[in-house]
Image (cartoon, rainbow, N blue to C red):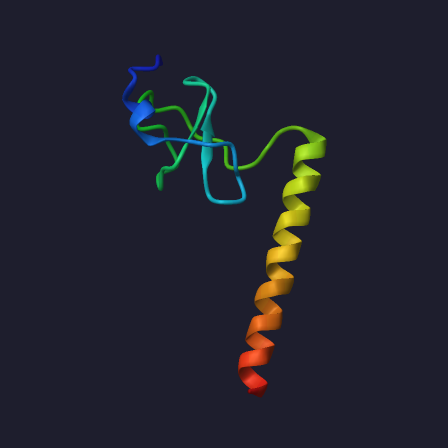
Length: 78
């Protein structure tokens, strides 16, 4: 499997938390709804491999969950 350059049209920055995925073959982050790269067909990574980046992602997800819970509780009582 090789990169055909199609993925460049879906290029994004490096944020797993915002739903972006990484293709290891094409070596870039893309905004794509599927599980496989539209360019090379390789499975996309949805989570980081590095321990520090995993911890940072977990922290961001925890903050988002807390904010959503607070909003839903406020909506119930108001």
